Amino acid sequence: MTQNIYDDPEFFQGYSQMARSIGGLDAAPEWPALKAMLPPMKGLKVVDLGCGYGWFCRWASEHGADSVLGLDVSEKMLEQARNTTSVTNIQYARADLEQLDLPEAGFDLAYSSLALHYIKDLPGLFAKIHAALKPGSRFVFSIEHPIFMAPRNPGWLIDNEGNKRWPVDSYQLEGERVTHWLAEGVIKQHRTMGTLLNSLIGAGFSIQQVNEWGPTDAEVAVQPALAEERERPMMMLVGVQR
Figure (tube, rainbow, N blue to C red):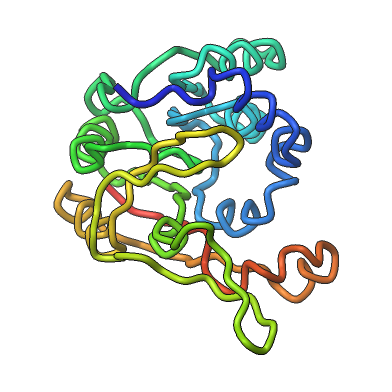
């Protein structure tokens, strides 16, 4: 079973204070690039894998989706999502993505934001998502970039000229990485970019777009702290077609 770190009180408290937890999609700097990968929502049946607070579920409904199913392993996340959702075409359910069970060809779009790096059997999940999508449908997701997933502890180093550097440790060694982010002992699953993309191809998807996201000049001007995201890609945004 996927580690349910989001129900850990310490982790959830820290997560609830993050800008994207408070401000939603518009507070996530990668959202404009991710949104550009999405098809028009009108009339779609959508599944959100790792829906968290339900921000994307509500956005999809507001933009014309026929129905939206938000899935998450965290009861705390789902409670927040339900408390902030009033429309009837959104349903939330607790689900472990390692044991996903979805109807065959039941959806027009699968979406996931920063959840898939927790999944151990990612090829298995990709196969299930492929089966759950109608032919021609899209799967759009963000995931922690493999470079970001493989740092030396404690992460940033300062070189002799005072510049921050992100040293990578054992990039080719795939598997479990234990990090200390918001709480001790957060387990993530590192895999190379090649493994990630080939797993999608192996599941039958056609890769449409890959974005190793980084901030624009305008975004850095508004949020100077984003400048460090130019030193190494933190996220990958991927769009594929069934």
